[in-house]
Image (cartoon, rainbow, N blue to C red; front, side, top):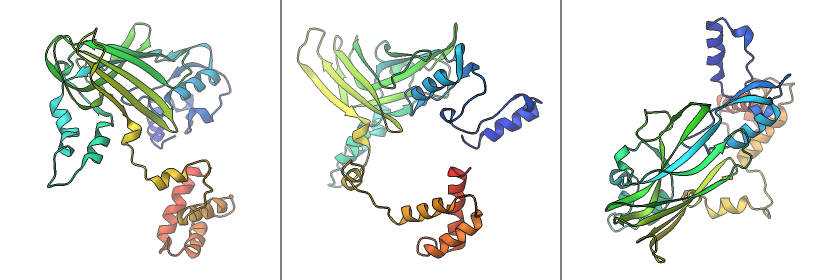
Length: 322
């Protein structure tokens, strides 16, 4: 739906095929086709395939827009994970906020940073164990957007582990694909880094278990990782145990949280009133300039100048008009 589709139109024209391609500047879930398609091609991933509404979008397009037996590219993704020793990265992301800053306690910041995952590019030697398969996503059948999997490793040397690296490899078509493994050729996606609440000093024979979960909530995924560090395969007691979630890293004031609850009866604030005024005026009878003039007259405190009002109306017309 982005305006970058114009580059595709221009490229088609530059190559003399503009009369053979129909461009839809819209989400695929909002279009219909006169005939089912022969091929469904998509790349809606982020650092990992579990990103925004990727799974639901592919499922909808496969069901509504692709003819039975039609080809899909990619066919499947496999997501892998491995523990990493990455002191420099951990120092950069988390440690600065752990220190005592002239007597100030900044642990609310360090706690949130430790519960965020981020894009990174690891060196192969930063992986301290063989990769474990977390999940396989078969796009020809997948329906459930949530994914959960448990990965386990037994370490073969003394090392400090700072978190989990995760990446995917893909099968585009039978026998054709690529990998985002740290030792593979550099690709767009990189790898995800899920830091542990604190570094784990490990010995040879120690075991690590990470229960990684991806929950689609609203417009994107909430990631949860539960880590257990044990002295060996038979050890019942854990040396360390963490439960982390990107939900706890988000900053949401109690007031904003209350306003999203079912019992709350909302009223429009000043910005909402101004937007409602514009939306009601967008009935196809008035030009943008006239709506902007009336908006500025109606809400002079919010829009001190005509240009301020025009910018707001133009933005809403581009986003929501037809």
